[in-house]
Image 1 (cartoon, rainbow, N blue to C red):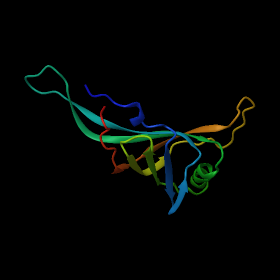
Image 2 (cartoon, rainbow, N blue to C red):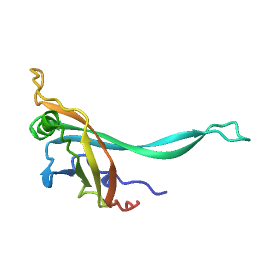
Image 3 (cartoon, helix red, strand yellow):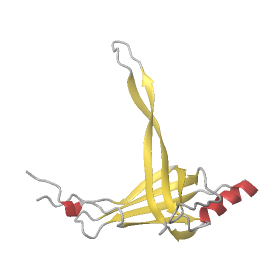
Image 4 (tube, rainbow, N blue to C red):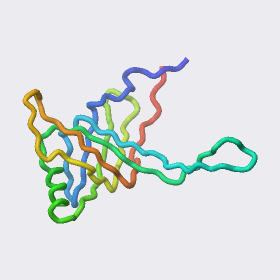
Length: 154
């Protein structure tokens, strides 16, 4: 019986992320957590001869969130640019999962058309040892550049 070896699981700390904003690449070393999710949009379909309501995929929506240490003004500046000028910023984020202890290699995902939903403009917290912030976003496209390979089975 085959099983997954613990060494082939991916450590959450073994990764990196880069944002390309207005042609400039920003290494996002301040990320604590990032998650991007795709959700299908489905229409309900009723047909003759079936009592069940069936579902048909008609599109999708991409959304995500990232928790970052409160050490960059980049996202606040992007929001301020929108507030002051009405010019919104769409950018891409590349997320790489690569744990050198694992035999499955790396996975590289690119999120395109990333657009911020909300930003904390100012923050103080006397109870916090290190300030952080949660940033929610949407995205309009996704690609996989590198895929994990199958793990070596014991």
